[in-house]
Image 1 (cartoon, rainbow, N blue to C red):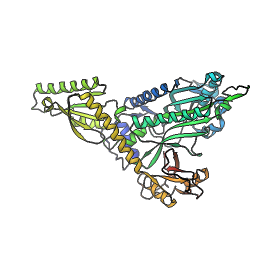
Image 2: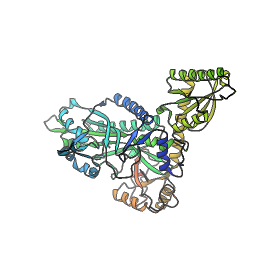
Image 3: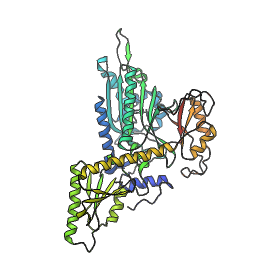
Image 4: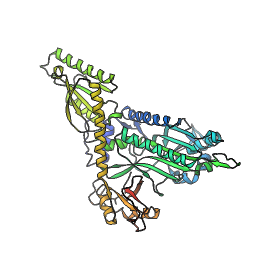
Length: 501
Ligand SMILES: O=C1CCCN[C@@H]1CCCn1cnc2ccccc2c1=O
């Protein structure tokens, strides 16, 4: 397992898979689009689960587990939202050599499994609010080019499904879930996100409205959806008869939300922070936060000094572990410090401490910071607190670096002729927009013109058209006197458009 040969700025997709494979984040299985999550990435998912799980608990959301399988009848119940997705549904048709009486679907999402049970459990307003979540896998047999974490046929996620008596409670819950998703990205993964509303065309068909956190990958100039939180209105509760007795005997259908966050987030983190030396892990999700490497041991070093250096490394590791830091001393023999440096840089460990003969007396260590390459002399006094502060500083620095890059890619555009040049320059555009679906279709078509010298897009193929990414909650300015950049009708909002995953 060498370093990374592909260059992020030259062959992004080759670079991406090399980083994942050589940092031991994932491996292939014999099913196309299905990947093995190795411990180095599964640890990240566990940190995300702990972070979100703590917030769900605080919000009174209860974890549960529903079956993997859906009957044909149950799935067809909500046919109008499923029909667009039907080609992605995987079906079990036999067990052993005998055909099943009727095919059974593997869950692509769990509304049609959960909501018949909700209808049974919810009868009076005292049964509300009902807030449940499940951590599970789902299967969607996509035909688009699969990519580890970003688009796989099976992925892990959490799906929250909540029920309320009133719309205003549901509206608050939608935003509470969305804020948790923003927090995972920004406070755990150091990845900047923009919160907003999805357009009519991009919204989930079964929803009243869809809110989203949208990321952006400057290296390829494409947006990526980071997580969604839908207000379902009473669409599903009317379909599944989930209601409570009104005061004069009529049924009051509940107001529902559903919100989901997936292992795609790990792919977004890798694309955002990693570089040509390999993975770069945000400190808060790194399996190993500090690695300690003995250095300066040569043929001239006495056996006694070598032992002292190794003992110092172990002592340092233990002091860090005692302070709650995930630290490891790499004392493997017959491996040079240089090889260890490359290995832990490839694995993305945020901090390396070097301990050599000098450190035996200097009471210092040389800290090497992975994301920036900075080297810094650090006193060993109170090293636990010092290291914690350093890890927080690294998180802040990684976030700031990614935020600056994202902001630099957002171009406020008021004239159509500036749209495609911005897209071809690997940017997204924030444009005064009428919010009409027909206009969105035209923007997609008109912006799918030949890429100029955009290395990220195959020059033979036409460039991907721009989709609406979101209508940001934080608007750059008032839009009332503005006109839609594409069709000239009065603009309703500044909307983010871009090529996307
Ligand atoms: O996003 C979320 C968040 C988590 C709960 N589900 C909602 C909506 C899922 C939309 N969806 C997405 N792919 C599908 C694929 C096959 C069948 C149905 C569907 C489907 O309903």
